[in-house]
Amino acid sequence: MKKASTSQWIRFGVAALVYTLFIVWVGNFWWLLLLPVIFDIYISKIIPWNKWKYSKNKSVRKLAEWADAILFALIAVYFINIYIFQNYKIPSSSLEKTLLVGDFLFVSKVSYGPRVPNTPLSFPLAQHTMPVLDTKSYIEWPQWDYRRLRGFGNVQRYDIVVFNFPAGDTVALNYQQTDFYSLSRQVEDELHYTVSGSQFIRSHEKQFGKVVYRPIDRRENYVKRCVGMPGDSLQIIDNQVYIDGKALKNPRKMQLNYFVETTGSRWNDKTFSLFGVSRDDSRDGTISPQNVQLFQMLGITPAGTDAMGQYYYNPVYRIPLTQEALDKLKKSGYARSIMVESDYFGGQVYPINFDLGWTRDNYGPIWIPKKGATIELNEKNIALYQRCIVNYEHNQMKIENGQVFINGEPANTYTFMYDYYWMMGDNRHKSADSRSWGFVPEDHVVGKPILIWLSLDKDRSLFNGGIRWNRIFRFVGND
Image (tube, rainbow, N blue to C red; front, side):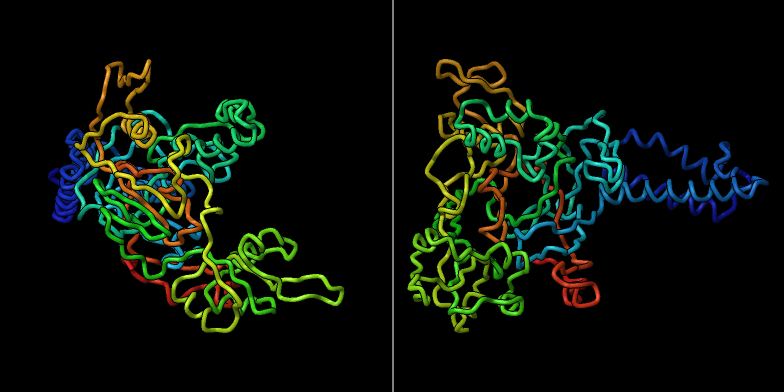
C-alpha cells in the first residue's frame, strides 16, 4: 500500500465509486463484498493479477494478453447488454413502413428501467441458442424473480417497444416462428379434434422438434407499437382502433392489405417500388389468373374475352399499402379496382379456444388488465385472462363443478399483480400481434428502440442501394 502511486489511488477511487453507484442502482448490496477485490487489484496487489505480464515466455504473455482482453470484453458486453442497451435487427415486416426489414436498432434498457435477468448465467449476445453449436446459451439455474431497476420513464401509448414474446414460453423447435398454443390449435383443426394438438406435437418429435420451455428473458424478442395501456377498454372496428370508445390516431405509415386489379398490364419491380411494395410482398401477393373463385368472391369482373371466347381477368395483386401510397395509386391510372382485404383472410384470434365472434379487423371490446384491479371470474373472463393468471402470474387454477379454485382456494374474483399492454404492428394485416396471442405483461418488456444505426435493403445488392443511407442514425420516434 505504501508503494501505491497517486494515480493508482485515483483509479481505485473512480472504480470503487462507479461500482458502488451501480450496486445502489441494482439494489443488491451483497455485491459490496467484492470491493476488497477491487482494492487488491489497484492498491494492495496481494493476488498477482498481472503476473502473466512478467513471464519470460513470449507466447505465454501473448496468449494471456488475448485471454485478458477477451474476458474483459465479454464481461463488459454482458453488463452493457443487460443494463444499458442491446442491438436488435428487424426480422419481419410487421412494423413497415415505420421500421423496415433490415433496420438495425439500438434498444435502450434504461428508458423503462432494465430488468434484473431471470437467467443470469448466460452467454452475451445469444438470446437462447448458441450459434453453430445449436445448444442453449444459458443455464437454467439459478433463476431470479422479476425485478426492474429505476429507469427514465414507463411505457407510453404509441411507443414502439421491444418485448419477450409472451406466448413463446413453450416452443416446438422445428416451428419456432409459431407459438405452441396456436400450433396446437392448428393441429387439432387438421385432425378434426380427434386428439389433443399438444399431445400430438409432443409425440411426433421428429416432425415438430423437441418441445422446450423458455424462461421470460430467453423468449424471442418481438417489436410492436403499444396501442393499449393498463386499464383501457380496446375495440377494433373496420381496422380502426378505439380506446374507451374514442378513435385512436393511426400511425402515419400504417399499412393495410389491398386487392388491386390492374388496368391490364403486369407490374414490374419498378412499378411496385413506385408504391413502396417490397419484392417479397410483390412476389407473394401475385394472384394466379386461374383463381377465378377468388376473383368472383372479391367482385372482380372479367376484363374481356380472348380469341377462343374464354373470359380472362386483368392481373390482380394482394399488397400492403400506406394511406399515402393508396392515394397515389388511385390517381396513377394503374388500377382498375382497389378493395381492402376482408376479415375472411384474418385467421384465428385471441383467445384461441373460446369463440367470441371477434376477428382480426373487428375485435373486442376487451379490457386490458391493470395492476391492483379486480375482475369477476366468469366463463368469458376465464377465457380472456387465464393465461395472465396462470402463465404470467404463476398461479394454479382449476374448475370443479362450476367452482373456480386458485391455488387450492375457491375464488369468485381475481386481482392482478402486473400491468399489461396491448401491442400491434403498423403493418396491420401482416402482423402477428396481441390480436393473435393476447396481452404483454410488464415483466416481458425489454426496452425502447431509440436509434437506427444501420439499414440494409435485402431487395438490392450492397453496392447498388443495399445500404439505406437516409435511415442511418435516424432516431425512432412515435411517428
